[in-house]
Amino acid sequence: MSDTTSPIAGRELAAVAQLRIVPRRFYGRWVAAAAILAVLAWLVSAFVEGDIAWPVVGQFFTAPAILSGLGNTLIMTVCAMALGVVLGVVFAIMYMSPNPVLRGVALFYIWFFRGTPLLLQLLIWFNLALVFPTIGIPGLFSWRTIDVIGPFMATLLGLGMNQGAYTAEVVRGGILSVDTGQTEAAKAIGMTRLTTLRRIVLPQAMRVIIPPVGNEVISMVKLTSVASVIQYAEILRNAQTIYYANARVIELLIVAAGWYLLVVTLLQIGQYFLERHFSKGRGGSRKQRAAAVEEEPA
Amino acid sequence: MSAVQSQAGGDTAIVSVAHVSKFFGPFRALNDVSLSIEPGMVQCIIGPSGSGKSTLLRCINQLEKIDQGAIRLDGELIGYRRVGDELHELSDAEIARQRLATGMVFQRFNLFNHMTALQNIIEGPLTVLKRPRKEIVAEAMALLERVGLADKRDSYPSELSGGQQQRVAIARALAMRPKIMLFDEPTSALDPELVGEVLNVMRDLAASGMTMIVVTHELGFAREVANDVVFMARGEIVERGAPDVVLVAPTQARTREFIAAVLK
Image 1 (cartoon, each protein chain N blue to C red):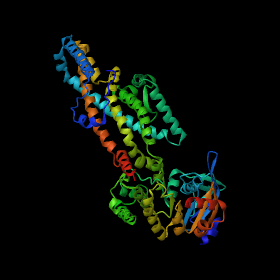
Image 2 (tube, rainbow over the protein chains, first blue to last red; image 1 turned 60 degrees about the vertical axis):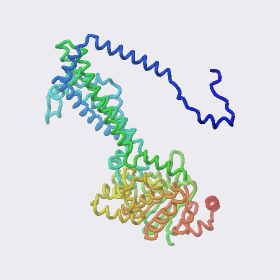
Image 3 (cartoon, rainbow over the protein chains, first blue to last red; image 1 turned 90 degrees about the vertical axis):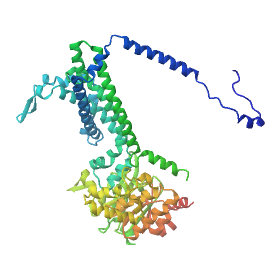
C-alpha cells in the first residue's frame, strides 16, 4: 500500500475511462454504528428490566395534575417570554438612547439581572413581602404584598425580568445590524427618532432578532421548572407532588421529561418554519445577495 | 446670475450658510464656509473626496451638527432658537420639522429595504405628514410615472437596479414636497451605464424650477445644468462662479488640477 495512486500512460486513458467504478468502502463507520447500536440496546434493556414501572408512566402521562401542570408551564412560558420581549425592546432602546439617564438605567438593569442567578431572583421576588409588607402608592392605594406576589407573580417577574435583560442584548444586536443609511434616510424625510425606530429600524432588525428569541422560547419552557422551588404548580412540581404521595419518583420524572421533549420538539419544528419565513424576508438579504451575485459579472 | 454676487446672503436666499466650521475630532471638515443659494437655482459642488462637500450638504439638513457659524434655511435659523443673546438647541421634533424643507438623495440610495417602491414613497407623507392614504398613493404613482418606474411600484429595492433605486429615492424625496433638493453624489455608486437615467431625472427636475444643491463628479452634467459651481478643497470654498468659468477656465491652480485629473 506504499503507492496508492496509479501512473498511467496517455494512450491508456480512453480505455480506463470505461472501467467500472467501485465506491470507497467505509468499514470504520460500520464498526462504529454497530458498537453504538450495541450500547443503545444494552441501555434500553437496562431501563426495561430496571426497577421502573412502565405502566405507571403510561397511567400518569395524561393524569389531570400533570396536564394542568403542563398548562401552567405553557402559560408561564408565554407570559414570561412576552414580558421579556417587551422589556428587552424597551431596555435596548434605552441603552442606545443619547439620554445618559435612560442609558444608565438600562445598563444597570442588564448588569443586575444578568449578574445574579435566576433561582436567587425568584427567591427574592417570592420573599418580597419580607422587605415590603405592603406595596402601592402611599395615600392612594396599597395591597398586602403577600396577596399580590404569589407563586405565579413571583415566577412571572423573575423569569420575565431575567429574560428581558438577555433579550435587550439580542434586540440591540438586531438594531445595530440595520445600516445607518436607513436611519439617515428616515431622518431626511422628517421622521423623529422613535418613529424611525418603529417604522424603519425595528421591522428590519426582526430578521436578526427572531432566531435567537425562538431559541430562548425553547429554553424558557425548561427554565420554568426552576419555579417549582417557589411553589408554582408547573409540570415538574406537580410530578413531584405526586411522587411524594406514591413514591414513584423515576416514573413521574420520566412523565415530565416526556412532556418537555414533546413540547420542545414541536417548538423546534415551529422555529424552523419561522426562520425560513424571516430569512426569505420581504426583499431580504438572501434575495439581495442573489441579485448582487447576478450583477457582478457585468 | 445674480446669485454669484449674493455670497453674503441676501434676504431672498433660500439657503444661507455663514462662516460654518465642522470638526470630526481634530479633523476640520469645514473651515469658515459661507455660501448662499437663491430659489430656483441649481448649485453644483465639486471637489476631491474629503474636501467637505458632502459634509456641507449634511449640515444643511442637520444630519451633521455644525460647530461654528450659522445656517438659514427657508427663512429660519436651523438647529437653534434665538433667545436674546443665546442660541438654544431645538428638540428632536423641531429639527425633524425643519428637515421637511429639504429633500435628500443619498449616494447609496438608502431605500427602506423592507418596503416596496410605492411604500417607500408614501412612507413620509403617511407617517410624518399624516395625509390621507388615497391622496398620497395617487401622488406617489404620478411621481413613479415621472421617474419612469410606474411598473415597478410593487418591487422591493433588492429587485431594482441601482439606477432604478436612485430614481425611486428621488421620488421618495419629492413626495415630501421639499423646497430644496439636496443630492449627495447621486450617481457615484452606479454602474456607468446607469448614470444617464438618473441624470435625466435630475435634468427634468432642474427644468421644472426646483432649487437643487448637487454634490457631484459629473462635470458634464454640472456644466449643462448648473447655474453656479463651487469648487471645494480641504473644507474650504476655493472658487465659485458660472460653470463656464469654473469648469472651463478656472482662476485657481487647485481647481485646474482637479478638473484636469477628473477629465483624464
